[in-house]
Length: 125
Image (tube, rainbow, N blue to C red; front, side):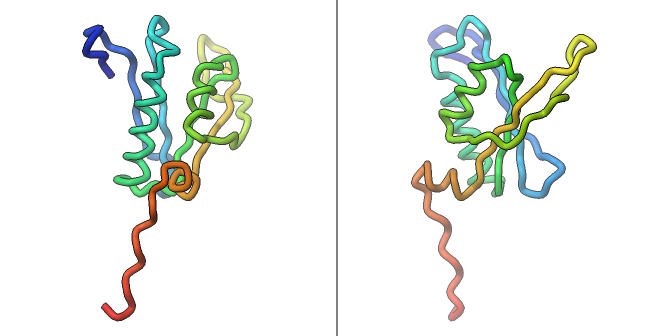
Protein backbone atom coordinates (compact mmCIF):
# COMPACT_ATOMS: atom_id res chain seq x y z
CA UNK A 1 0.00 0.00 0.00
CA UNK A 2 1.48 3.35 -1.04
CA UNK A 3 0.26 6.89 -0.39
CA UNK A 4 0.84 8.62 -3.72
CA UNK A 5 0.90 12.11 -2.23
CA UNK A 6 3.48 11.14 0.39
CA UNK A 7 5.23 8.81 -2.07
CA UNK A 8 5.71 6.49 0.85
CA UNK A 9 4.76 2.93 1.68
CA UNK A 10 1.93 3.00 4.19
CA UNK A 11 1.75 -0.69 5.05
CA UNK A 12 0.89 -4.14 3.77
CA UNK A 13 -2.24 -6.26 3.74
CA UNK A 14 -2.93 -9.81 2.61
CA UNK A 15 -5.66 -12.40 2.45
CA UNK A 16 -4.80 -16.07 2.89
CA UNK A 17 -6.60 -19.40 2.79
CA UNK A 18 -7.12 -21.17 6.08
CA UNK A 19 -7.41 -24.90 6.68
CA UNK A 20 -11.20 -24.52 6.66
CA UNK A 21 -12.98 -24.57 3.30
CA UNK A 22 -14.10 -21.07 2.15
CA UNK A 23 -12.72 -19.39 5.28
CA UNK A 24 -10.01 -16.81 4.62
CA UNK A 25 -7.74 -14.82 6.95
CA UNK A 26 -6.59 -11.24 6.57
CA UNK A 27 -3.43 -9.78 8.05
CA UNK A 28 -2.03 -6.28 7.88
CA UNK A 29 0.58 -3.88 9.15
CA UNK A 30 0.61 -0.07 9.01
CA UNK A 31 3.75 2.04 9.36
CA UNK A 32 3.63 3.42 12.94
CA UNK A 33 4.09 7.04 11.78
CA UNK A 34 1.03 6.73 9.51
CA UNK A 35 -1.40 4.95 11.84
CA UNK A 36 -4.73 6.53 12.68
CA UNK A 37 -5.33 8.04 9.24
CA UNK A 38 -7.82 5.43 7.99
CA UNK A 39 -5.48 3.81 5.48
CA UNK A 40 -5.88 0.29 6.83
CA UNK A 41 -9.61 0.53 7.34
CA UNK A 42 -9.98 1.50 3.67
CA UNK A 43 -7.60 -1.22 2.48
CA UNK A 44 -9.16 -3.89 4.68
CA UNK A 45 -12.65 -3.01 3.47
CA UNK A 46 -11.46 -3.50 -0.13
CA UNK A 47 -9.87 -6.84 0.79
CA UNK A 48 -13.09 -7.99 2.51
CA UNK A 49 -15.05 -7.04 -0.61
CA UNK A 50 -12.56 -9.01 -2.73
CA UNK A 51 -12.69 -12.00 -0.39
CA UNK A 52 -16.46 -12.24 -0.28
CA UNK A 53 -17.12 -11.29 -3.91
CA UNK A 54 -14.25 -12.88 -5.84
CA UNK A 55 -13.01 -15.64 -3.54
CA UNK A 56 -16.56 -16.55 -2.47
CA UNK A 57 -15.55 -16.70 1.18
CA UNK A 58 -18.15 -17.92 3.65
CA UNK A 59 -16.30 -16.08 6.39
CA UNK A 60 -13.16 -14.02 6.87
CA UNK A 61 -11.19 -13.89 10.11
CA UNK A 62 -8.30 -11.86 11.52
CA UNK A 63 -6.23 -12.01 14.68
CA UNK A 64 -4.63 -9.23 16.69
CA UNK A 65 -2.31 -9.16 19.69
CA UNK A 66 -4.20 -8.07 22.80
CA UNK A 67 -1.94 -5.04 23.21
CA UNK A 68 -2.67 -3.86 19.63
CA UNK A 69 -5.74 -1.70 20.27
CA UNK A 70 -5.38 0.03 16.87
CA UNK A 71 -5.82 -3.28 15.03
CA UNK A 72 -8.82 -4.14 17.18
CA UNK A 73 -10.41 -0.78 16.28
CA UNK A 74 -9.92 -1.41 12.56
CA UNK A 75 -11.54 -4.85 12.76
CA UNK A 76 -14.48 -3.61 14.83
CA UNK A 77 -14.99 -0.64 12.47
CA UNK A 78 -15.26 -3.14 9.61
CA UNK A 79 -18.01 -5.01 11.46
CA UNK A 80 -15.95 -7.98 12.62
CA UNK A 81 -16.94 -9.60 15.89
CA UNK A 82 -15.05 -11.52 18.57
CA UNK A 83 -14.64 -15.23 17.76
CA UNK A 84 -12.15 -16.58 20.29
CA UNK A 85 -9.28 -15.84 22.65
CA UNK A 86 -5.94 -17.46 21.76
CA UNK A 87 -3.58 -17.90 24.72
CA UNK A 88 -0.80 -18.86 22.28
CA UNK A 89 -1.48 -16.66 19.28
CA UNK A 90 2.04 -16.38 17.87
CA UNK A 91 5.57 -16.65 19.19
CA UNK A 92 7.80 -13.57 19.38
CA UNK A 93 11.27 -13.43 20.93
CA UNK A 94 10.74 -16.83 22.52
CA UNK A 95 7.46 -15.93 24.24
CA UNK A 96 3.84 -16.50 23.26
CA UNK A 97 1.74 -13.45 22.39
CA UNK A 98 -1.92 -13.61 23.39
CA UNK A 99 -4.38 -12.79 20.62
CA UNK A 100 -8.07 -12.40 19.93
CA UNK A 101 -9.60 -13.76 16.75
CA UNK A 102 -12.28 -11.66 15.08
CA UNK A 103 -14.48 -12.69 12.20
CA UNK A 104 -17.26 -11.82 9.82
CA UNK A 105 -19.63 -14.06 7.92
CA UNK A 106 -20.67 -13.52 4.34
CA UNK A 107 -24.23 -12.84 5.54
CA UNK A 108 -23.03 -10.12 7.95
CA UNK A 109 -20.87 -8.56 5.22
CA UNK A 110 -23.81 -8.54 2.79
CA UNK A 111 -25.98 -6.86 5.42
CA UNK A 112 -23.37 -4.20 6.25
CA UNK A 113 -22.37 -3.52 2.64
CA UNK A 114 -25.88 -3.56 1.23
CA UNK A 115 -24.83 -6.29 -1.21
CA UNK A 116 -27.61 -8.49 -2.51
CA UNK A 117 -27.12 -12.24 -2.96
CA UNK A 118 -27.05 -13.54 -6.51
CA UNK A 119 -30.48 -14.75 -7.62
CA UNK A 120 -31.09 -18.47 -7.49
CA UNK A 121 -31.32 -20.13 -10.92
CA UNK A 122 -34.86 -20.59 -12.16
CA UNK A 123 -36.09 -24.21 -12.10
CA UNK A 124 -37.57 -23.52 -15.55
CA UNK A 125 -34.16 -22.92 -17.07
